[in-house]
Image 1 (tube, rainbow, N blue to C red):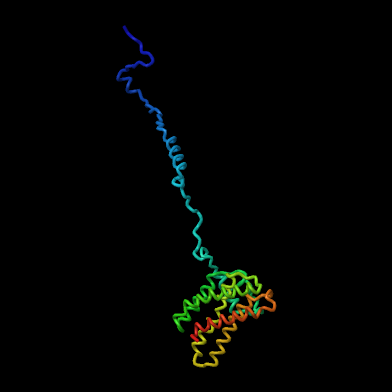
Image 2 (image 1 turned 90 degrees about the vertical axis):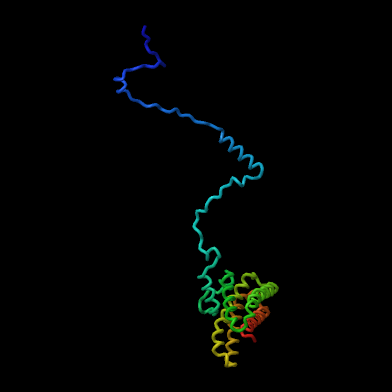
Length: 236
């Protein structure tokens, strides 16, 4: 008795026919779901409820380019150079916009001028270097308070910048004093010229029209302040 093969039964073929047979077996696409997404969601919720959500935060890298050091410190060399020229050449006829020294104050320019004056003062007396910086800060504070009492509209930063920049004339006359130190009369004249130059540069910026008849009350303390700065350098 002979049975014919049906669906699901094996079919036996001869070796001759088997040589012509070919084919592939596809692997079943089986996905294992272990419930990882649910576990991750539960862990996230658990941490956030306990106040540890910051552990899940990922900091994004800053794609912006790193700023130059001078820009980070807010140092504008061109602006500082322009202000130096305004202080050294205070005459209105020269065409400089000198009000920028007062209206746009900065800290690093005046600090550099004060430090330069301090370094020069080392030749005279080393112990006065720290005093020069102290007098710059507290002397500017005194001028600021006096200006406010007299009705002036000026900030402490503006006074600090103007007083600091106006030390430049005393730095300019410092080499001359080394050369003519033996000539007392000439040396005294140069010192007076430097003090008047510095005081005029500062007073012309700080003492505005709002003071009216009270201008001498502010100009005189500024003049005395620069005399004291010079005395710290010369040791007189």
